[in-house]
Image 1 (cartoon, rainbow, N blue to C red):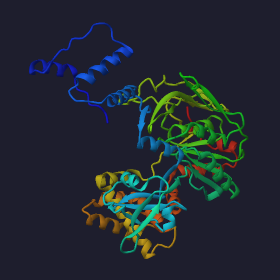
Image 2: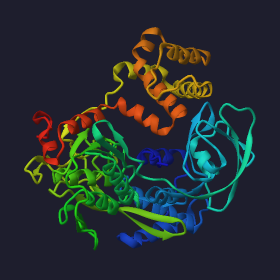
Image 3: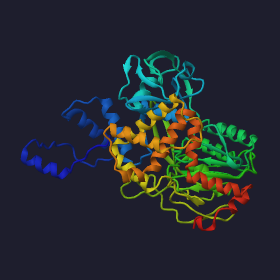
Image 4: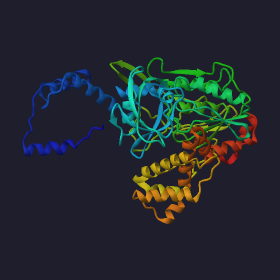
Length: 523
């Protein structure tokens, strides 16, 4: 929560006229540093109108100190926030093992994780979790569901499930287990013998998971690799180094850091021989690619090991260190800036509305740096791709329909999901290569009207790509499974198509660099 500050002079002036303005006289002399803090703490503790415990005062003082740094990356983490950070970086939590979403006001299973309590109980895609420990989940959001379903491994939870296409509720008593969520989904071999693998986030097992998936793809015949880092918010610096190590030659620098405290100025280099030196690689990035994911993209770009395709990355060139303070509390604090092998600082200078200050902003890096092959690269605003490709899959018509749906977009998603589940039960869609028909679109629109959502003919017609995109993905997911959904989405992905186009023309890393059109490279 942000504090709300009111104009001090106005309040002071009004108080003089309206009463209640007392001037306490104390000792004179300069107040600074520790003495100032002690004096303020003492006066608030003894004279403030409401009673506050000493512990509360110290907590608020600590919070105020951290907030005053005006650095969004420096925060005090307590309880669930600290647990969330540890879960994100480890991928481990206690739970029953399901991916969930909210559909039509109910917690709906997107997919069970393999070999987990939910999977072994027979809970599957499209099932609804309607009760947890006897409490209805109607109108719960995802956060509420996670709070109730997760817990210490070994503890039990009763889950009421309404299976898709079946009447009634089945209650399961499940024993929570330690669940590991992979940061690397199983790789997929695409057309032209191109392997595809995505990493999100950069967690403590990412390099091992990625190495296994790339090895499987190469053993399966992959002659090129698309490495997807889009919307990857980052994670552990050390794992970012290890992931880069998989693709670089021994001794090549990966990054350096510069900080004020002891141990925060350091350098990391590749420690092992490259695993797949002849494999051409395209790395996909966008504005959601940040932090440790940018470390990977920057290192591979600076050493000309991969071609970067997509849009300019987020630009987070600072490092945080987490100090465990005990009692489920930690301080995550910015301790250094990091630089790519060519010396780029990619920290973005935010606009005047940003809360960032000089604690995280350095002078803009306008220097032209050079990759190993002499290609020009710049810092000061994220990793700029070698080939700029916008993700403009759906176009203006789709955006117009999305705007027209507005707050009723959730109804649209409920309708497409429910319809996909019906098609699964009716078994009328029998091939992954199905086509979204006019009859399907009409059904979606009719059901929206039944919910009171009316869209004019012109907007609905222009928004057909949006309808087809969501409907085809939901049908693929609920009828054929998660992998089928991913294959459908990739077919409509312009950045992936651009990557596949480059790899179809280049079978070596050197040829891949030469395949990038000259007029689309950086200045």
